Length: 109
Image (cartoon, rainbow, N blue to C red):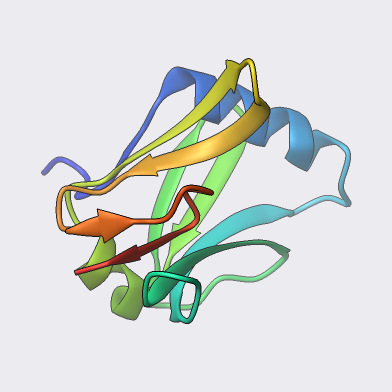
């Protein structure tokens, strides 16, 4: 079965680099919460434990966690890490989002 979320190779490399500087067992949790200028916002947090019902994506030294509540708002999304004129950032392309803000960290459904 394929994952309901895609993480690009660029994002995997960046996450692995970030986690390599943390204590052993560090993982990146990406979640959705209410708030932001468009209704929902993405959160990024380095954690050392996972929940039993998390979606876990492990690849090339990166471990990314998604909780079931966030997953329902992110299903079909792609997590990428981009470098452009504005700098470097994680970007999530979410097919469920009907609008998003200019900063790219919040969205509405």
